[in-house]
Length: 139
Image (cartoon, rainbow, N blue to C red; front, top):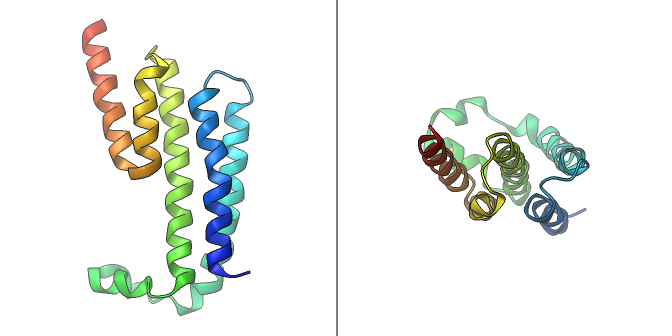
C-alpha cells in the first residue's frame, strides 16, 4: 500500500474519533473507542517505524539538519504524521477527561479540541489556561 493511500486512510479514520470527543464526551463508550482508534493508528505507526528502522541513523536526532534529513521520504513523513495524529488524539481525550473531572463546561473546551486537532500543543495550552482560570474563579 502506498504512503499516499495510507495517509488518506489515517486522515479519514481519525475524524470520527475527534467528532466523538466533541459530540459524545460523556458516553461510557467514548474512552474505549478513542483508545481503539489510537491503538489502530499506533499499530500503523509501528509498522512504518519498523520498515524504516534499519535506515535510521540515531545520530540524526542530535541536529536539526539530521532530523530534517530523516523526513526525506514519503514513508518517513507518513510515519511522523501518524505519530502526531495519535498523540494529538490522546491529548484531546485527556482534555475531555480533565474537563469533566474539574467541572469545566464542555462548550469551553470545544475550541481546545479544535486547536488540538489542528495545532496539537496550542489546544493543550488553551485548555490549561481555561483550567487555570476556572480553578482561580472557583478557589
